[in-house]
Amino acid sequence: MRILRTIDELRAALRSARDELGEAASVGFVPTMGALHEGHLSLVAAARAENPIVVLSIFVNPTQFNEGEDFARYPRDEQRDAALAEAAGVDLIFAPEASEMYPDGFDTVISVGGRLTEVLEGEQRGSSHFEGVATVVSKLLIAVQPDAAYFGEKDYQQLLVVRRMVADLRLPLRVVGCPTSREDDGLARSSRNTRLSASERRRAVAIPDALTAVAAAVHLGEREVERLRGTAREILEEAGLSAEYLAFVDPESLEAVRTVSAPTLFAVAARVGAVRLIDNRLLTLPDPKR
Ligand code: AMP
Image (cartoon, rainbow, N blue to C red):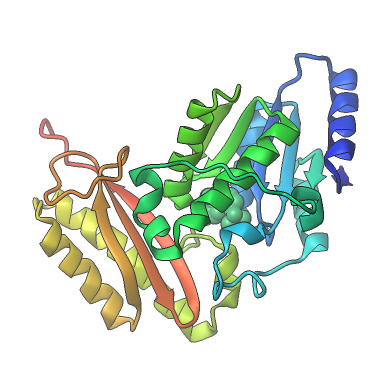
């Protein structure tokens, strides 16, 4: 496994990998911000299963954090990441400095418009958040030119935004969504979990508990979003967590719904102490034939 710092080095390494494995050898790409955990490694496994060449990027992208967010405190440990990536079968790590991605005078932004970027994370974190994401992801996709790129459903809205951008720019790759990897108690794996104290870590389980309780209520026949939201809020408040949003939305358009009459995405953002966590679950209706 090699670690590349510049786009030129990355392109040369990809060229020699293809020389070795044949022009038809496909490239699977997993973009990350590092602090790797099993969630990231599940994306690597999906990429590994479908492509002879796997590239992982590690770049804590400053432009997707707004002022006051946790850019400076974001966990970074490249040595550990490299060992985990190598054991998982990554061939090339692309880990550029910010100056490689944003050289002096950089002045181009990719902006996905409309509802997909305005609601939920876009509303809470500001419009620059998804501009930062779309710009860095498009730059990475242009640098790597993968056949397929792998993203987690944990960041569901980000996955929709990337799909929109790839379709709109007709970028020639598949975008693959991968299921959320969870700890044994249900907490979605996240690099930010390492910043939770022991007591915060215990209380954070209220987030997946709220998702599960809402899914169970839907299966028992509850369809009214206001009542479902109340159920979730109670569970979070009991654990002392404050919800930023408890959103019930159409899983394609992110349009808010008032009743659950078709598959509906339930998306949560909540603060546990100083750490902001997000999670979501697709609510499905029970099969009437059963
Ligand atoms: P991040 O390093 O947090 O920017 O995440 C990099 C990629 O890993 C994104 O596509 C995330 O959606 C994905 N990811 C993060 N956490 C998980 C998880 N628990 N399960 C599956 N994918 C994840």
